[in-house]
Amino acid sequence: MSRSWVQISAGRGPIEVRRFVARLAERMEALCQERGLAVVDVTLHGDEDAPASVEILVEGDARRCLEGELGTHALVERSAARGKAARKRWFAGVAVHAAGADAGEGAGAGVDLGELEISACRASGPGGQHVNKTLSAVRIHHRPSGITVRVADERSQRANVRRGVERIAERLAERAARRVAEGEAARWSEHDRIVRGEPVRTYRVGRKSALVVEEARESR
Image (cartoon, rainbow, N blue to C red; front, side, top):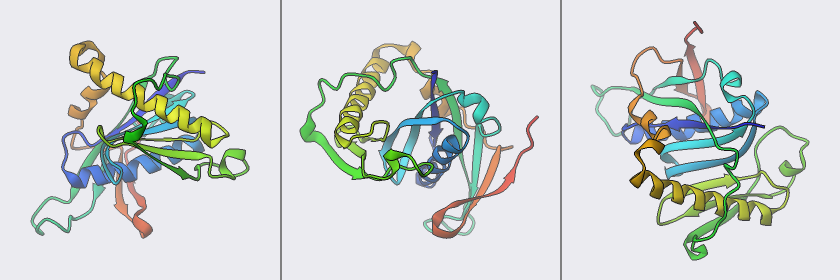
């Protein structure tokens, strides 16, 4: 089955946009599952509560399942750290990129386990699945790079830890490769392509900091 990256990016936006990215990533992950995409793992770049970008590795036809969600998303929220005259609309981007057949299947060699923070968490998704009944999912944070992955693809916690370490090793290798290979920066160019205006979704913040869709642009 084909795999794709669903990328949620703050572009070059400030802290308010990065916080929006964290909320938007939660919504997109839930939407992927609701629409039949299998979420393999999630990678965050930056602080977990305010990442510069989040990438969700999914199996299935992501472009078809997420039709109407790709493009610019806007949050209408006044920042407590800025004056009343400051802008209150924050923009983030959602894009889909093809993933290689071996994405999520790397080797974890070269990762110093002493630099990792590993914690168990309950997997999200529809009820009734074995993986959702136990704390088999894991969250792994690589302190030097700031990369955090959450993996729930396997049934056992040990297998998910191994997969998570492999994913971090892959992302570190990708970062190194991008420094010497300009042609491999396609996903990262999305950070500069966020268009302010005509967002596909506009949100406000509801109860428990959940995003509430205020307006959706009609598909053309």
